[in-house]
Image 1 (cartoon, rainbow, N blue to C red):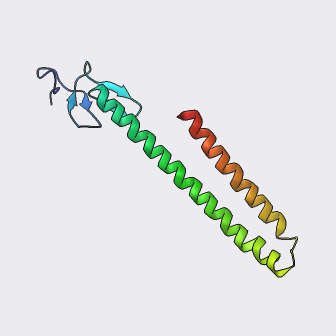
Image 2: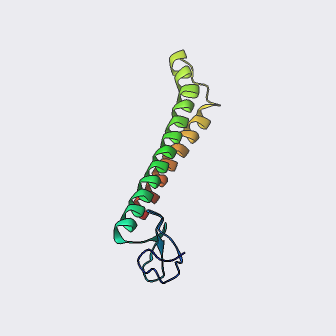
Image 3: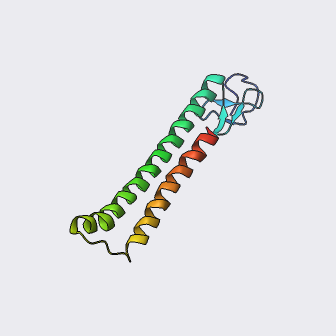
Amino acid sequence: MNCYNHTNVVAVGLCKSCYKAVCKDCAIVTQQGLACSKECAAILNESYRISVYKSKYLQALFFISFFLCIWGLVFIPYFFGGVIVYKNLPLAILTSLFTITSIYHLFKKDRRSG
């Protein structure tokens, strides 16, 4: 397979955005793979950024859901029942703190990388 731009030069890979064959002179190396142009490199970087954001968002939703389940299972019944069972209270507090710190660190990493 030959380069789309230099038809007499053997290609070293494919652009991950448009799938054109590129030689070592045309290839632009990105974190996501090879690109054939600055436009394709920008598309790759943007699509990677969006996928990372979506995965971080889904992870945060999972942790928040987990926190709300623990809140509903442990705290709410005892507050409305008028009785707080202290053997379950430390577990609920630790779970809540773990969830909050996990979400904090999740977005702290995302800000550093982005």
